[in-house]
Image (tube, rainbow, N blue to C red):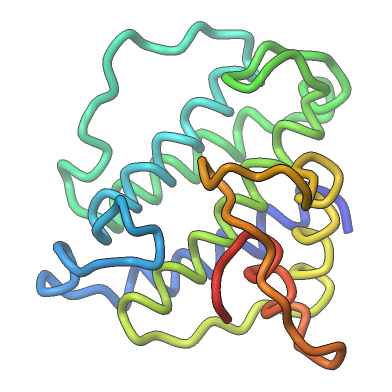
Length: 183
């Protein structure tokens, strides 16, 4: 799977989950202990805007705006559109400065999309919604994380220790377990 296809499939998943939110979900806890649903969405939206800016070789703004000021659906539409517009073939082939270093654009897009997919699981788990990515997408995201985040030596900052799952676990369960979440 290529990062553009993964981005489009992940966008559809997040769009559906966000459409299923209610005002009561805003302050609910998520599997990311440091974030409520509102804060998790702010992280996801902010990450999309940061990577979109990086793909366009724009410096990150000094202050982050409230990405959810117009509501979660409008915020996601804007973040998703910015990322899709920035993910041109030329941008994906070039090297860019990102918050995590100098990387090829395709790798930057892969990392943010894999991040979005895992946070889609967090959102679904927090709000009692279904999370059913296709196996190919979940395998792609798992391979992305395996290529950039080693299983050994994790400190809990960003990624907790890998959670053991059975050999017959679904691709989605193996993905979230690799990121330190209990499927």
